[in-house]
Amino acid sequence: MIKILHLSDIHMGSGFTHGRINPETGLNTRLEDFVSTLSICIDRAIESEVDLVLFGGDAFPDATPPPYVQQAFASQFRRLVDAQIPTVLLVGNHDQHSQGQGGASLCIYRTLGVPGVIVGDTLDTHNIQTRSGEVQVITLPWLTRSALMTRQETQGLSLGEINELLTERLQVVLEGEIRRLDPDIPIVLLAHLMADNANLGAERFLAVGKGFTLPLSLLTRPCFDYVALGHVHRHQNLNKSNRPPVIYPGSIERVDFSEEKEDKGYVMVEVESGNAKWEFCPLDVRVFRTIEVDVSKTEDPLDKIAKSVAKNDIEDAVVRLVYKLRSEQLDLIDNTSLQEILSPAHTYTIHPELVSQLARPRVPELSASSSIDPMEALKTYLNNREDLQDIADSMMQAAHSLLGNDEDLLDFLDNHHDSDAKTSVDKENTQLRLL
Ligand SMILES: [Mn+2]
Image 1: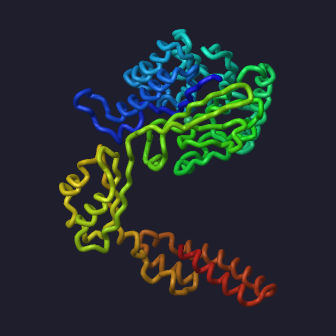
Image 2: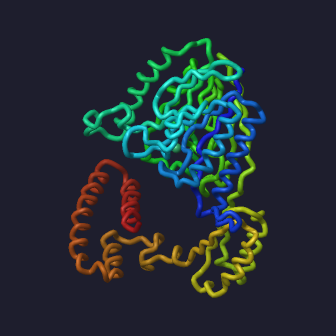
Image 3: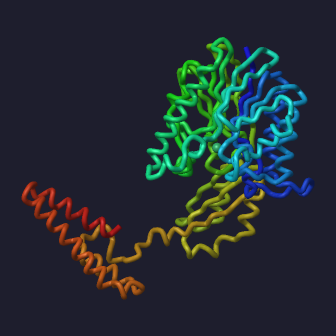
């Protein structure tokens, strides 16, 4: 059995807006949080005498972290070198520099020849000798288009087609890597990627168009004993059958509010040829708390806010207060009192939202309930928009030609369907133009 600690997505140096300067150290408290959480992971590796540490990528928020952040990261991993625990540092998308080859911030460890530290910046297999025997680790860093394809090959292709081509290419290269493996020695795949069935939660909107998605079938190959992933910040196992486990440990600290409800931690693994056992180990990290309250219908908004805040434990938390109010209530909310209510928090931000502006229709004659002819609706709208007067005529003309087509469609429907269909289309047309 080979004992592995698998962690990922450290992102050290990010989220400073959620911290404050610690007057004793001069450092941002969120940097101190990230360092102390990482040190807990490293403590665990040393205390549990693991044979290997695997880091799944994204050490920093970008490829050029300031020296004091680099040093904080290095001084934690240095402890693994002292304890003679081999470590693989995989390069994630945030670590890659856009200029030149091998420009990732983590490559300095290879350049310096730090004993026991392997940098995974290419697809490669590493035979690692540990205290409990040998293990084979395939490193698959974050792939960019240029890693496997030339510009000519991808010219004129859609993003989806490029993704497909990249998957095909990767399949071939990975196959070559797999053929070289010794099946009697445990095999771990360490990869920084977006798998196609990963549950992104709140991050899914951020992820769109930000890189390639690889099929899970690429990872669930029976030749792998454990698949150690990085990239997605929410902890999850993508392969419920556990043959092999395909694990995102998630980030070790909350990077932003999209991770408010996620557990943070690392994974302990015991692997041998043909078998792997794993366990998620939660970390006690700083709480993020969003408090939403609607005070638009209350006489005493400040009191309602205070009561809503009191229902939450905000002590030492990063707090976001969102309250909805009417514009007439602005004077009733005294900022000093708000700050006092939120003072137990580590840091807080306050987001007032005016509710009346959201609810009031901009053109009162055009409410969704009153039925109105589309041309009339447009005319009413244009009469209310002084800024559009110079193009009002051409808009009316354009609408006329568009609606002419609609009439053709309605005639068509008249001849082919019953009258109910016409009525519903009519309604739809009206509504579409009101939106
Ligand atoms: Mn990433």
